[in-house]
Length: 136
Image (cartoon, rainbow, N blue to C red):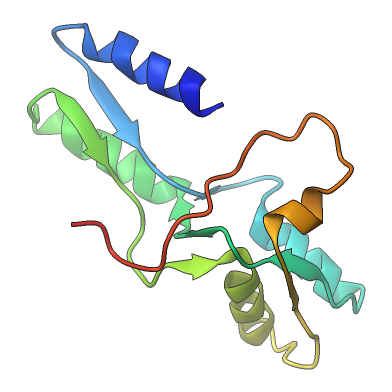
């Protein structure tokens, strides 16, 4: 997966005029991680969630705003990194926050590793684990 992504980036960067928008953990309308965790809460399920993938949610509404800004201001072509603000967190941390905001502090979130979570499952794309520090 990482090689395919890198190859795509290199291909786009060969063009003269391009915007390449890099982002993380996109949340929008329809099925998404937040809604899945809320459904589990409605069913009184205390889930096991990976805690070694670290990142930040990015809302589709913000991506639209960023794309509009790039186009309307005729920003210089190139690669842009965009996510929402806030601390870098694991999926397990985010689940705890979702449960707290939903008033479901009574549910427990059990940490697991990505390797443990996907053990024995075929066709799973590698997941970057990330780090808990801000990029420079």
